[in-house]
Image 1 (cartoon, helix red, strand yellow):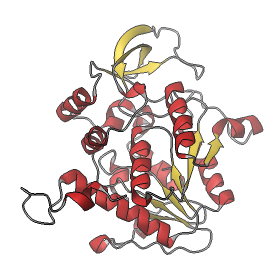
Image 2 (tube, helix red, strand yellow):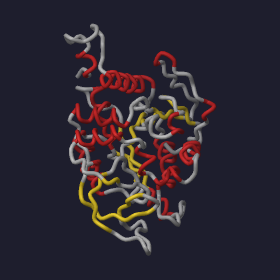
Image 3 (cartoon, rainbow, N blue to C red):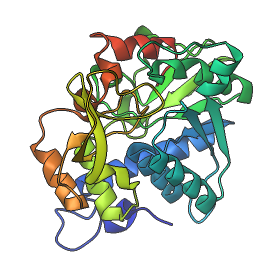
Image 4 (tube, rainbow, N blue to C red):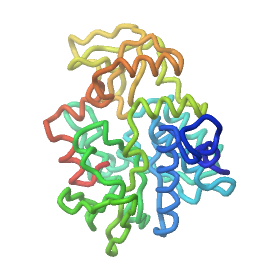
Length: 314
């Protein structure tokens, strides 16, 4: 299967025979990245949570290799506090594409005593050890992530190919130049490369691409009535992770999620956007990034994300 970019370049009415639309250019770049990794690495894997960015990433991988099957397996770091709608979508997608899913379970590490629950109930910071150990035991040498530079300033520092040392740690000072879309995948035994095909996309790009490609999403991304409570300026979903506390009152509200992670630190936003076009209109008017507006784990400190990335988190 050819990509949209490969078939639209010569359409009548464009500025030239090789002119691409904005989304076509982003799609073409991402497809190129997937094919580069397939040619350079032995055991790549795609991080797949059932969130919108990983869904778009898998869609692009399918396009990159069609009509052949996607030559990568999937990896999900399961916190045990995931939204049921997202897990259902994840499992259906794995079955539909007949892919192999690796799961790194935070709960397993807690049960063994390797990790301890945090007082605030959030497990997002506990994902690093299960992720890095799964990468090491499975000998993955390239790991695709859905991170985008517009999300957060630490992610804005990342290259498309981002080297991790033998301890899965990231050193911003070891960034490699990426001139003319030339990617350096060389790494020593024990090291691996994190790969970000959506680096140059924005949240709006992702939603516009979802609309153009008619990509199905979990219903949690669209406005729905949900029982939530207020904490630290965010609407959180009650659950076994420890919310609500005394004085935090549950109420029904019309909300949707801009990003999806651990239930304990991912907030909903008040919204009436029940269709793709309504979501796009809402995002166009927003002045806050999705993580800045709805992720409590990024508000722990000014450098929270960068600190976790240095330790091996995505």
